[in-house]
Image (cartoon, rainbow, N blue to C red; front, top):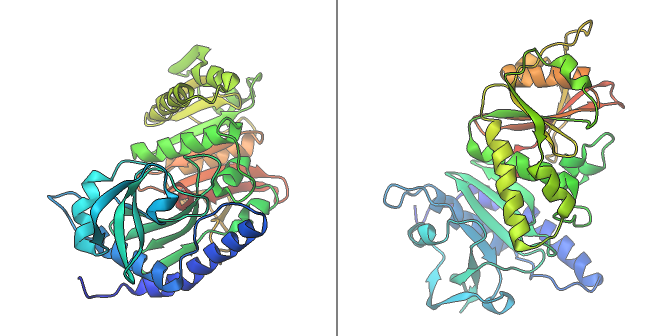
Amino acid sequence: METAKYGGANAAAPRIASHFASHIRAAHRDGQAVAAAPSVSTVEALIDAAFWASLRREEGYLPKISLAYLPAEQALRPMVFERPLPLVPAILAKVAPAVERAGIHLGVWEQDGELSVWGTTRTIPMYCFVLEVSSPGLLVVKHHRGEESAKFVNVAVLEGDRLMMIDEKASSLPDCPALLASLLGFDAPASWAESVNVLVQLAASMRAHARGGALLVVPSGTDTWRESIVPPIVYGIKPFFSELSQLMQEQTQGRRWQEALTRAVDVVAGLTAVDGATIITDKYELLAFGAKIGRRDNSPRVESVIVTEPIEGSVPHTMNPTEMGGTRHLSATQFVHDQRNAVALVASQDGRFTVFAWSPCEASVHAHRVEALLL
């Protein structure tokens, strides 16, 4: 394993290196302080080491690692090892338990002509190359947004021999939901308090609990959504639960506020694990959970849905909702068809995540597969 080469690294490195080089050149022209662009050989070496490390077990645990390509001088308050560690799978797997928590990166840089791990850091510069080991054989390449410590943009996903380059132009397509545009994150950085980011946090939290779930986002101030819900609603909330809504109105931006927002998001996302759909308004007022979706009176049964994925080379295709998954996908498609001002977020137990929204341009329900953006 130490001498074998991962073919996916060789195939992916040129495209990924080109992506970082172009963005970093553009940032330099704008006078921004950015990270160094990794070379093709550097990207290949990082991916190769991370891939083989992802297949190892250390004391029964699978490694979760985040590698950041930068010198220690570009990090803020780094923890520097007395002796750099060689960039080899066995070492990465061995040190993984110490750095598996979110926000901690192993810093990698060239020393004496070789890539080595110099220590750890929690802060990295804009457009810093980051490579995360998500699960065995599943790697995610990201870069940092610069303005917000927690904001990253997914650049590529490598799964076995498959390379998925995120399509930067997907957010400019007609009828692109605001949630998808925020997940793609290629436009100007959004504020933590911007409303669509709450849905991003909810989507990530829903996917994290790995039980599957459905979240319906309906317009506030109207009960039209009830026409598509089977009565009685066993777990209705009255008055509506307003903690998430109130936090968004405060927008203090402090650490305590961010922690409170994260807890509130996890509370709402946790409810989606209950069989049925969780319902919130577009002002984040919790109305119900465990609700059963039904077809609205006199509404036709949905026979087709347009499915897209924000991956380069991916093309839209039309399918019957029953081909997408189970009951959650079918009922979410019907709900959005009948409630065209609503959006449905559906998480599958296998990690798939779909955003359903009505497309006026296509006069159809549009299913956006976005799991590659949530890794």
